[in-house]
Image (cartoon, helix red, strand yellow):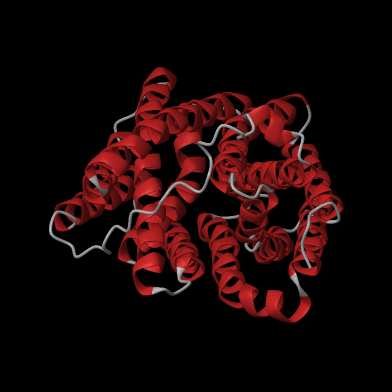
Length: 373
């Protein structure tokens, strides 16, 4: 839980301070989108390497390296004075994906070791800590603390955690047999995409993560620069998004048991679209923050539901199917910031957010094509 919470806290800090970093370098949405795309693309490469390391050497080395490199990259952001330097630091920050990989691998180890479903709880801890990071950063900025100083202190805290992770007790790794992905009758990735349920899962995760990536990258800028909100309200808007995600993940399991996965997923898309509709329609920062709250509540259960369905959509090949759906999510995080930023450059962020609204409607539409109750 500590590992998940620290990862979430850093995300909340980063999301709020991104507006200050972009303003200090004079970056528009398009240039910022290119930088965020470099960050995500580097993350995909580091993730592929990290997966092999985690299987060969265990989780601890990946956790220690991932936490330490996350701390280093945050501290380096305080020294960035040019766009070229920002691109270099954000490319280096792809190492953060190793931290992400370690957390989820450890979460899976814990579930297998103890026979308990705890991943949703861990992710709720991530979202709750992200809310604290966003709110704390906004409060610190409102008190006149420089954004670079906040980056340095957050990075230093993660470096301390990386040292603690050298001795931190971790769940025992449980090695399981291959689920059939290596058999001779296995489908290729492209063949799996022709399975209607798998294709629907890929599409829903892509739409969900595209929305998440855009909101994470541009919400603070939208509230603070486009709508004129102050630093504290900008931080509070993002905090509401993360806090809502934490609450939604805590109570989402109960809703699925009562109403079923299909209804929850269908409703998630519509509620997220409603929230984005409020954000697009209003000029009041406080009302926009309420809209973001609806989006956070709605989208939080989407990924867990889709990964559960994916595991059942291709019997004997769940590993391949899940990796394909996961790849679509990372591709969304790579593509979404640059597309949203490009559209904002030629029109406005309001128009870009309207595109996200359409993606959320698509989540509801695709929920009817997925094999679930």
